[in-house]
Length: 577
Image (tube, rainbow, N blue to C red):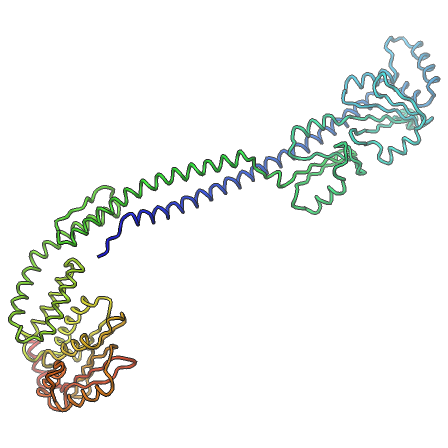
C-alpha cells in the first residue's frame, strides 16, 4: 500500500487556507478603501455644503450691513435732510446750506454725508467704496475712503450701468439703496455700498477641496476675480447631472452663490491612508500565515501518528494504541475507534479466526479428494491476496463463506432445496467478490414459491467457477453475473447469465452437442460436463445443461431440472415437522 507523506496534506491545506486568508484580507482591504473613499466623499461634500453656506451667510451679512446703513439715514432728521440737500443741489449750494443749517442749530455735533461715510467705514472695514448718485442733477460722488472722494456728473450713465448689471464686478459686489423724501415720497437718489471679496476668499481658503463662485444675477462673475467658469455653464452642468462633479447653487439677494466639487478629487484617498491600509493587510496576512502554519503542523503531526499506527497494524501488530484524548475532535474520535478496532480484531482473531482456520484446515484435508483442486486453489489464493492487501480485516467473512461451501459438500444430503443451493451459490460468489473487488456484480434470485423445490446439490458452483476461469474480463470493471430460477409446469429452469467473454458460435454448438450426447473429454474442463451428467442421471436424458449466447455479450447457461411433486411435499412436511 502506498504511504502518503503527511507533508503533502500540509502543503495542500496550507495553500488552501492561505488562499482563503488572502482572499478575505483582500476583500477587507477593498472594503476599507471603498469605505474610506465613501467617507472622504461624504466629508468633502459636507465641506462643500459648509463652503456654500458660509458664503451665503457672508453675502447676507453684507446685505444686512447695507440695509442697516440705509436705515440709519432715516433715524437722524438732520442727517437725512443733509443727504437730500446733497442730492438736490450742486456742491457749492449744498455746502452753503449745510453751513447755514449748522450755524442755526443749537448742537455741536455736525451731521452730514461726510460724517456718515466716515462712520460707515469705521463700523464696516470690508466696505470697499460708497457711491452717492443724484437723480436730480446726475451728480455722482464716490468715497473710496473718507479722504479719497471723487465727484462727477455721469449719474445718468451710472444709473444705466447699474441697471445693466454694474453693481457687480470681479473682486467686489454692491447693494443699491434708494433715498426717498419722506414728505413727498420722491426718490432723490441712491447709495451704492460696495464690499470687498476678501472675506469670501478667506472662506474659500478654509475649504480648499471645493471651488466657490459668486455671480450677479445677470451672470457677471464676482468671485474669483479672473474668469474661470461662466454661470450658464455651471447651471447647464448642474441641470445635466454630469458625473464629473457635484454642484450646489443658492440665490441670495441679487447674487448667486455656487460651489463645485470634482467627483474624482472628492473621493480620492491620500496615499498615506492607502499605504496604511495595505500595511495593516500585510500584517494580518503574515499573522494569519503564522497561525495557519502552527495549526497545520499540529494537525499533520497527529495525522502522522495515525498513519504510523496503521502501518504497524499492516505489519501485523494489533497492540498499537494511539493517543485519543488530546483535543476532543474528529481525529481523537478516529484514534479512539482505531484503538477499539485493534482490540476487537485481535480478540476476534484469537477466539474465532484461529479456531475456525484450524477447523477449515482439517475439513479441507478431508475434502482434498472430493473438491475440485482448481476451485480450492482459487479460493485459497483469494484469501491469501486479500489478507496481504487488507491486513486480515475480511478473512473472517471469507473463511465463513468457504466453510459454508465446504459444509454443503460434506454434511448436507445429496438432495437439498433450491433455496439452499442458491444460498451456497451466493456464499461462493462472495469469495470472488472479495478476490475481484470492484470488478464484478452478482445477483441471486429465488422466489418463495420455488424455494422448497428439491434439487441435487452442488450443480451451480462448477458453472460459476467456469465463468471465473474462462469468462470474466479482468481488464474491465462492469462484469456481471445473474442467477435466477423459473418454473414451467414440471420443468424447473435455473438460469446463469453473464456478460463475460462468451464463446464462439462454432465452439458453443460443439459443446451443446457434447452435453446433449453426454460425452466427456478428459483433456478439457470437466466441471460443466459433470453437472450435465449428474442432472441426466437424476432427472432423465431430457434434462441437463444447455448453452446460449447472451445479448449483447456473454454466456447464458440453462440447467433443466424435473420437479417431483411428491418429493417436494415430503421435503415441505419434513421441514414443517
